[in-house]
Length: 491
Image (cartoon, rainbow, N blue to C red; front, side):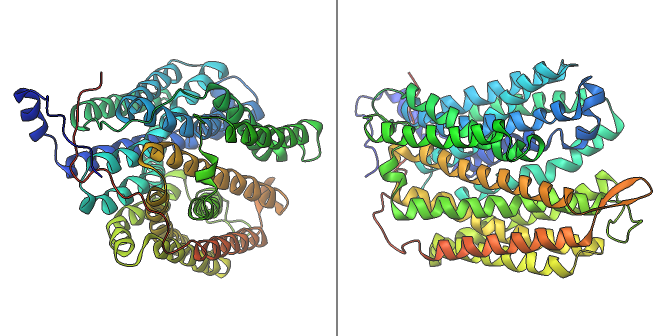
């Protein structure tokens, strides 16, 4: 049932409510905010090879500029989601955007490693605005517009990175690298202004107290697992550090799960998360995150590798970035189509179709990866598949999760995508490093390396589609609280 209006509202308040921004304006604002947040992920990609010189550090330590952002995003997203459910989603979005702007300024003023990592962590925290934005849509826009809006905002997770990479490459190639972070600062400020002036405040709140112990336990366990996966190749998979982090992280999360089940106001309601539709959707999300990151990790290597062995395509970073742009553009263009399919046939169908399309894309890539147009074709097909899958996952989650837990549940789903991406980065790195040939003093991946990568990508996507097939067509549904959106000032 939609929340009923407060009969004690003054005439001025009622007049303000009738002048609320349109659903299109709200959706556009949240989509733009998601694009800006996703752009932060690929912001430093063009300067990764030069970071050791820029920051006067080692190559191994410079990788923390990327790793720190990944960890911060994974840990903070479900936590910020829970805070949004409790204290107001727009309020938490504003806080995250301010942290993102602050982190961008810190990085823009940094010339050494530690401040850069701190700034990048704050930028990573901002990625939680995507899950919160999807949850805001459920609260404040009309149900007839919800499917398309959710699909669009969900797609920004991939679109922002794919479209932003050429921009970042162009700036990095022609200007001082600090301008990348000043651009990020300006974009974050624009997002703050737009959200503050356009996005309304929903009255929906979850009761109880914030689970600080649960947040700490979740963070420690997740950091251990993600660090072990992302750094295992560098530290050694059998090293005490890697094994200690991996086993320790799993143990901490198991203990955390037991404690959460006994906690009244848990960070994540594991009983809801264990429901078949939510559990299977999250498992399928791992495969989609895995497949998406294979595209963004393996194809640039293929495009930029020297042509001396007949495998690489010898392109510049900017050209490579432009070749991957169709991935994001197609995701953006497909969001309304995916939404209509989900409305007509159910989001389960969209998720299955997305997984099958990705499976076909990587199957094609196994044999077609020797020309630039092959790469563009593969990235475009993957964009179709990921577009369908990303649009379906939040809808599948929201159908079976109480409205007061929407943001936290979507945040957990984002963590599953991040886990898939982290695993994909590790797998791609391991395969490439073990299939190299030396040509002219340069180590170049072999064609066999890419065939193995694409075969694994196709297999994982197929497993995800099979998992999605077992998601129930129908289940307990909570519906949408936004039939008659009522917005009030946050107090």
